[in-house]
Amino acid sequence: MTITKQTVAERIAAYLHHELTLAQLVDWAEAAMMNGELDERDAQTLSSVVARLGVADVRAFGLAWDDCEALLNQLGFSPRVEVVAA
Image (cartoon, rainbow, N blue to C red; front, side, top):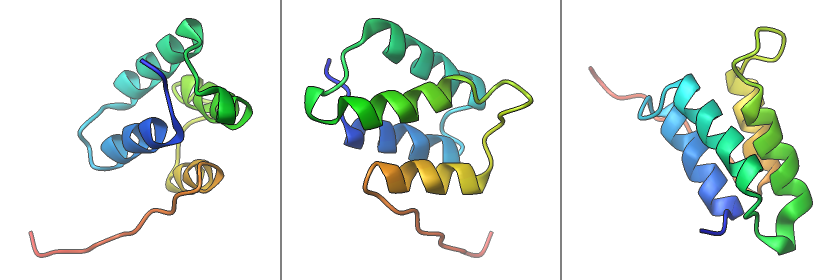
């Protein structure tokens, strides 16, 4: 399966929506880098973003909201926050 900007953005969104844990996101990113099936048209951007996700479980790197926002921006997306009653 070819990994596109949309694919990576969906993974980040799933993490932000608590549908994926950080460990699951990191595992996916590591596997994506090893398999090397990045969309050739955006390979440089995808490689950079996916590699960053792959080290998000290392304390020195982490993955804060600002990081997710910046990564999504690199992919051509922007996050939107919606606050609803619990």
